[in-house]
Length: 99
Image (cartoon, rainbow, N blue to C red; front, side, top):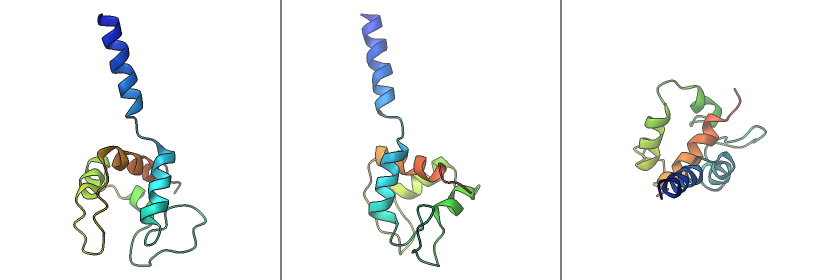
């Protein structure tokens, strides 16, 4: 019984791990109109940081990014109503950006 519970917990942890590919899809769907979200993207707003710049910002650690994406406080940032899993995926994608 204890082994079955341990295996179930291990399996559930693996399914909630942040996924960079899902984060890329979320960025392509919701973020790329304003932000440059990928290398080679030629269009984005001049007034918002690229995902690469966001990654480099020390003040925007995972906890702060998660809080911001949960309830955007910027007047031009839409409330995307992302789930906590989608937020984790998006943050994983941001953190995977090359400098």
